[in-house]
Length: 63
Ligand SMILES: [Zn+2]
Image 1 (tube, rainbow, N blue to C red):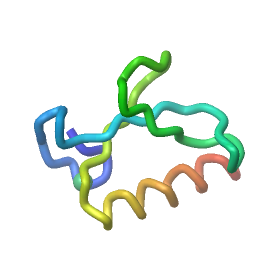
Image 2: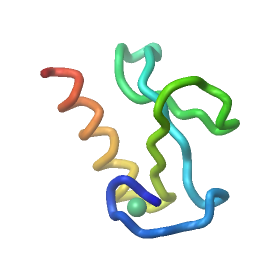
Image 3: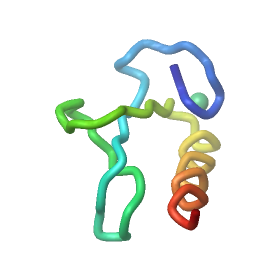
């Protein structure tokens, strides 16, 4: 399920992210292979969902 639009989609259509540290700092890191530890969050391929997901990560980071 996409965590932004809440649509149910096949795993192949979703991109897994886990909380971690990337070059941009702490936030959500894409995990295309699905092998990183931690709770995964799935986002679908829609541009709007990807954008909102990035903002979602930023908001969580500032708290
Ligand atoms: Zn979505």
